[in-house]
Amino acid sequence: MDQFISLINPERDIQPFVVNLTGINNNMLRNAPKFYEVAKRIVEITEACIIVAHNAQFDYRILCTEFKRLGFEYERESLCTVELSKHLIPGQQSYSLGKLVRSLGIPVSDRHRASGDALATVKLFKMLMDKDTSKHIIQNSVRSNPKHQLEPRHIDIIDELPAITGVYYIHKADGEIIYIGKSKNIKKRITQHFTNTNPKSKKIQALVSAVTYEATGSELVALLKESEEIKRIKPVFNRALRRTRFTHALYSFIDEHHYINLKIDIVDRKKKPITTFSNRQSGKNFILKAIEEYQLCQKLTGLYKTKTSCFNYDIKTCNGACIREEPIESYNKRVETLISKNSYSNKNMVIIDKGRDIDERSAILIENGVFRGLGFFNLNYQINNIEVLKSIITPMNNNRDTQHIIQSYLRKNKKVKQIIFEDL
Image (cartoon, rainbow, N blue to C red):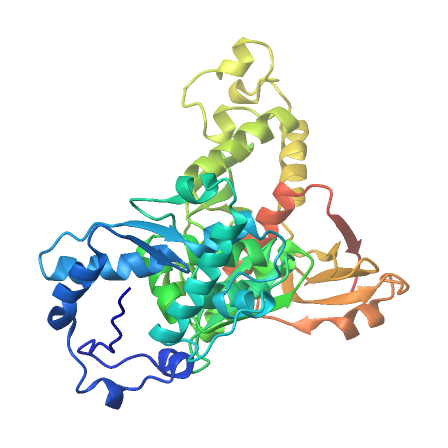
């Protein structure tokens, strides 16, 4: 019935990935009309109409944002051909406009430009209307506020990603890494980045050009690699993770009666902790479990402040260390067992976890209480051979973050295999 095609001057430089995607550059926009100059025409041609777009949420949001800057509330109903295609043409490898119309035999010219994409969307929409014989699906899909849909370029990125455990890197068009993360399902996690509406996610969505990844198999390996890579590369959107991951720690001291006491406290850089926690509540939960597992005294673990006996003694579940009834040696022996199990200080050990393939395992090496690095080995190898073990290890930095990551992981995953060596 009618058509209106125009470039718009955004009154600022456009980003490199947009130039690469569309072929539109700053010179082409210099003499184009500004949005306010075409706003009236857009209102007129969409009056009493339903806006149909491939990923309608994106297009509709842009229109609403621009009109809002002009002080005008732009409200239209909309239909999304991505959403409709998933209902009416299920099982497609990709629902990005280019790949979808190509697979359906719909010709498209002038790709990634308004006229070419709009005409391809018209042809796609006609096909969808033919397929919706009852017309219920299309009628039920009309929305006043479109559901959030992935942009086509985001769909293309996600299509290339696997649902595996590993570390992922989000890049800008010039290759710069702007965010590093880890996940047990990279595809799912990137989808969350692209659909979240918080300010950081929106900035990432606008800048992302590519996502690369490294498979790890083990979540522990992914956590360690993520931590090291963030410290090395310092991506702009990882500021929070560059700081220390933990705030509280478990410390021990011997009281005037020679009993070993435990205490959860704020991390003190001058003291050497037994283990660390992300927050005080996490530390408190650890102590509560330790009291039960090791039959420790509430008073001597800092949970029950009293000058006399603790509550557990009164109900006969504490052996009386709080009032010096239990022999020092027997009580301290249990505390030392807890300390030894939750600290790898001075230990020589290897943590064996999942590998990248079914016949592979990962190995995390601790030497004299210091994290040395990690590697992968085939199940045919004898991991008890120290020389073979050392040859597969890639050196990595040891710091408080790596200690926290390893100790926290071992607390949560008690079945992870650990091999203790007397001497490395």
